[in-house]
Amino acid sequence: MTAKAFLKTTQMIGKIYFREFSGPFFSVVFPVGMLLLFGGIYGNEYGAMDEMVPALAGMIIAVNGIMTLPLNLSEYMTNKVYKRFDATPVGKGNIILVQILVYLLSTFISTAIIIVAGRIIHDINITGAWYVIFPAILLSCAAVFAMGFFIAAVFKNGKLAQIISYIVYFIMIFLSGATVPLWLMPENIRTLANALPLTHIVILLQNTFSGQPVNEQFTAIFILLGIIIACGLIGAVSYRNRKWA
Image 1 (cartoon, rainbow, N blue to C red):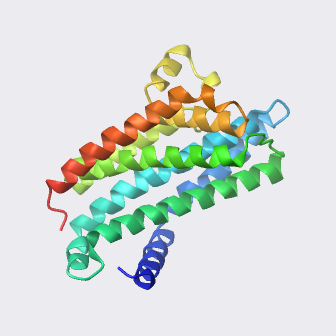
Image 2: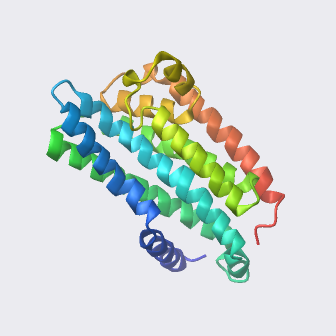
């Protein structure tokens, strides 16, 4: 596919994404609403919003990786969109690549919006270096997107993939510290939260935003790398063994 065709395809997929309600709402409007809600309750006198903003960035990643990506992959398969593109020079592989790129760009744009909103509304402090924060966000996206690809590839029924996506998404955002701070939860819930991938993403982002040393983030980094490898490999094998077209 030529660069011109790739750009046009990206524009097309981007328009489709922003015309839908769920993706833009849950990746922009909902996080800003949560920022206003918790900011009104706790303020930022003791740094509560300094921790909430990177946590909400984790929620944005989950929206695009767990809700939007697998649902749209399944929808394109069900509606035989990939079959039509396979009959063109574009091919379904490029369409999937463009979809992932659009959701990744949406994630970074939405994260930038929540950071700017945090700075304007609550004067949050970000002491971490951007050359550390950016790779942390990218690694988090890779892990969650791998999970979304895994769901779409393994669960062949589109409605089942949708149900699984919603269950995984809502469990993770409410029990990982992405919306409700972990320190507000009972000890048994915090123990359960440690088994959730998004918990480690929230911890990684909070620590990198606050400027903590990278060598103290190895646990979260290795867990996310393990998710990328496991979900990526299993998803790729399942992808090759099913009829996407």
